[in-house]
Length: 126
Image (cartoon, rainbow, N blue to C red; front, side, top):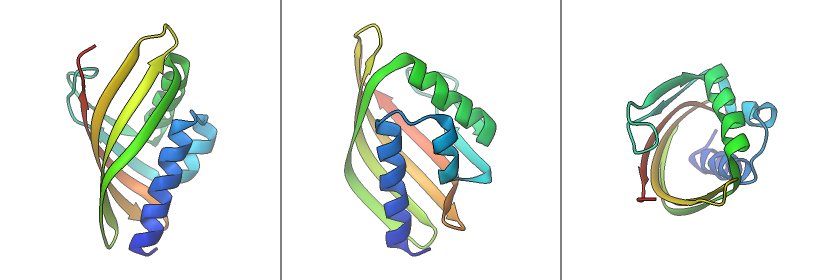
């Protein structure tokens, strides 16, 4: 897939996340052997490495916690089978708490899907 095709996939992926799509829909964005690495942050102080099954379980856990979420992409870099984005994120928990964060997400693609994802999530105080 072209660099532009990879960026389109990222846009569609973030759109699905923003509308809190179920894990069954999110699975289509990833290779069967996909891995996500979340670096340590305020909500996950030890970070976490997830295979596809765990990643999809986390999607559904997020849906159970959030009423809404939004992504505003502020920067994009793409080359070959890799892309990186910076995004401002906001979310509203079911209890009404509002959260904000700044993300850098690095993607590696294979066969038109996400094979690797690394998240650097910086949550604002809440």
